[in-house]
Amino acid sequence: MSNSASEKTKLSLSKNEIESLKTFLSGSTEYYVQAFNQIIQGKKYQFNTAAAILGPLWAAGKNVWFLFWAFLVIDIVGCISIARSFWGVEEYPDASAALGVAVLLIGRLCGGFVANNMYYKFYSRWRITPDILNGTSGERVARGAILMVAIYPLTVYQFSVSRIAEYLETFPTSRKIASSTAKVIDNSVEWLTITFEDMFDSITWAIRGMLDFLELLFIGTPWPVMALILLLLSWKMAGWRIVAFTAISLSYLGFFGFWDKAMSTMALVGSSVFICLLIGAPLGILAAKKPRFSTILNPILDIMQTMPSFVYLIPAIAFFSVGKPPAVLATVVFAMPPMIRLTALGIQQVSPSVIEAMLAFGASPRQILFKAQLPLAMPSIMAGINQSIMMSLSMVVVAALIGAGGLGYDVLSSLQHLDAGKGLLAGLAIVLCAMILDRIIRGRVESAKH
Image 1 (cartoon, one colour):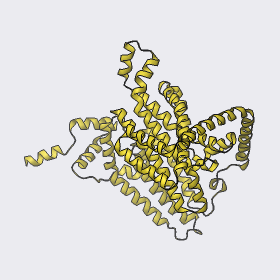
Image 2 (cartoon, helix red, strand yellow):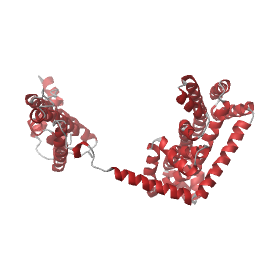
Image 3 (cartoon, rainbow, N blue to C red):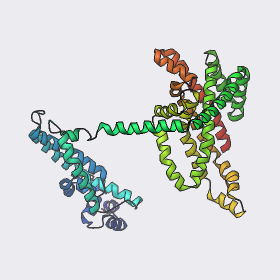
Image 4 (cartoon, helix red, strand yellow):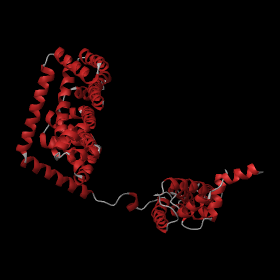
């Protein structure tokens, strides 16, 4: 008898737990002390009359929002069945009001039986993280009621009647809004193109010069010399395993006739990544040091990362015509956000104690940046360079649409002529180029960490 009594005392709320439950509920606790004790003793499913009657409002007031949405969905399904039996008989002849009422009753009964168990789980989470909103809040009940008023009528109406009001079926707008806005954008682009023609020509000239130099370096250099340089770079950065992988990959590019196009693609990627590093690293440093600037910059980076890649070609063609320079610029816009974000992250992760120590020894902000923050942030910056390289390579097929050439052109040509074999071989060549650069940069990052 004493053993069973001790087990029962263990399987119940302690005094401290009852006090915390009073704080959690901010009101009457007798019912929930009894209910939670039964849950602890293994009786998980008890019927909560208030939850069954009030449904979503009870769940909203108790901050159990998963149950709120479950109640709401079941209620809507039942109400749709009832509404169809009255207003949609012609289109839904099999609709039954009795079925709808049954769905409502079964949903409320099931919700009543699981409510206490779900509320106990929420209480257990609250004990670990007391910052979670607790008790029954009139504000949450009002929020739940507003959601119900906003969702119930329109949803039931949408799926019940045979003909929906036109202003609900399609968004009330006019085609003139889009056409007039597009015209304004077209006029703005035309004005910018004419006004800043010299600036755009200068940028195009500079990028073309960089591309010509890199293509001369990659393509003009005899292929054995170029292959040897890449193998030595792999060995220096990442070790013998990556040297073997690089040798196999370069052999593939050579034997299948992709060497020149691969080197042309490398030149385009190299130009893009150089511009990303030239612009992205200072912006990342500024974002790390200036929270207000970071707040303004982050939405712009979000747009740059989420915008479909084909959209970048529109301003590139509008301002810089077609060819490799606009392809480089479109690639830069697509590949720069990781460079900025990871540079800022690396600077922000430098330990404050390091900065305090340098300040104590009289270091200037420039010395702190170049002698502490940038060296310690180098692994993150290298990861940003790696991501920019990968994203640049992912743009080569899209850039081929405006005359970038390289391996992307082979893939694009195979798509146009349904030449699956050629497209797969060229795609594999792009993958191998990406993997060579990835392994080299990753090896450099790992060596920097050690």
